Image (cartoon, rainbow, N blue to C red; front, side, top):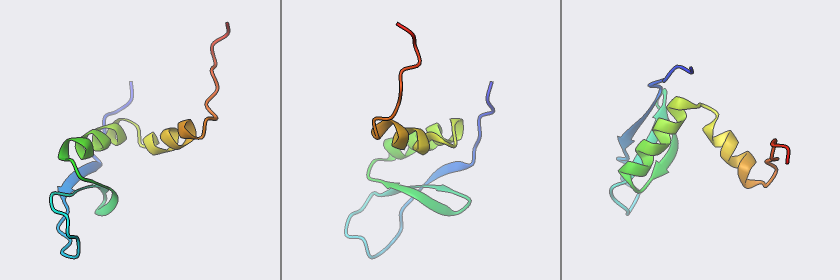
Length: 73
């Protein structure tokens, strides 16, 4: 079983140049990876990244349509 990490966290976005309020950042080591409008979605992304640090790589690979079915029919 894979180890559950706590590296990815969420925090409120406090940038003053944005006109939109209630933005949430998913960060790791103080670096922002993603900004989300919903706190729940930011927490979901952080949870997925804590389970699997390659979560975004899989989504990119999946969106390209290059995911092959490995099951034999």
